[in-house]
Image (cartoon, rainbow, N blue to C red; front, side, top):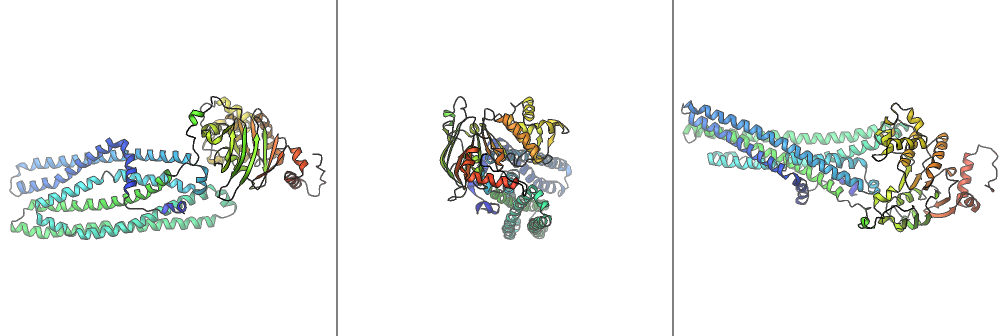
Length: 605
């Protein structure tokens, strides 16, 4: 339930625990934050001085007819404007740069954590939701640092300064100004309550929109193949409409709040003019004081509305930080052993694998593998067959520690793989999947995958060995040809050949093939088989296959059935048993034979 609804987390308007963690990202830049705070305080001082200068010009010079000092006051006023501009410039640029650096740090931390999480986490959480964590939620926290957590001191300081000055100028007018505060509080409370719920709705629908787009754009070929464009568009239109309506509701609250504050401010100004004008005529108040009071009253309501807006930023940041820290606090289930550095061998072993009484379940109580045991000697070629759901791919996932063994153990050269650092463990393997994943970049980049120690010559040699060089040479820029996202411009067979070149370039000790030839045509499969004979020389090979023809010459074939290892032997030995393997072979042979064709006996095969 938590994973499904975590985008609807709203939380408290202020959470001290979350705020302390957020402030932790500010500590490396505390000098910049202090500099921005100084600029804010300086700017507030310049702004508070402006009405005082206006009062002085009116009372001391204009009202008395002594214009000799007006020029000096005007220059001082101009100086406050320039100073206010410079302080605002320094504040804005410093806070924006501060926010960008914090956002950069947070995204690095989140992405680093995402890379270390086990695959089971991705089974439970849609990619679109995780994208929202890294993008929109980090943006919301950026807004807090650039416009909230530091600059709120300016609003508080400005408000306190105005209150002090108003009281010192004339307590009667100050009371008139403050009499509208109950109305301000009522409007602000209405705004906060409603915009809080509105914000929750907007965030929820943004996340659902991202998840929908990621899922349907990735599966666009399936959408088009099964003519689901209308249904998909209708669903997108529904989600998009909900997102629009949530934003419109938010706009309504803003449209009411700010004019209401302005109206209340105008009422306060009218009261000041009405009563203050009478007191000026009665001689108990100067005209300069009245003008200054009006200016301060107008400034009095601005920080109030600004702090209400910052409340929304705070609310957004609390909700986003709760989701982000929930992600960051997700424990990494598969980690390096604490004693890995001490026990790391000086040189890699020969690559002997022992699967000892291994059981595993994705869902507790429903075992996918049950007490499986076998040994793969160095350089041995092992094929794994079985019906769909028998646990073949699960076994590979356990060998690579994508998932943790439920019970039993897997040994690599006598060491439990849980005692081997993940980087060291996986460096022994190269995995070739049926569904090849290619990244945006060049052909050579997809073979090298960022390994700087793999030279261009090694990339070309690997491509030639698996017969990929032929089609690469026909590409516009050869090895420098840009590959579209997920290799969309390449055929299935071409992508498969590139995956073999990638595996060969990494020179693995143990080669793992998971249905690696099931998606290619017969001609390409023949080319790959030829390359595999070269690739397998001196390497341990584990091959999962549905096509029994691809593993007939293996040294050992393991037959899995409903999570159990039921048979083991060579192709000839398994046929002689006339068990599960014989039935699989018989069914596959019959499905491939022409209808009505005379089928020869396979007793002596």
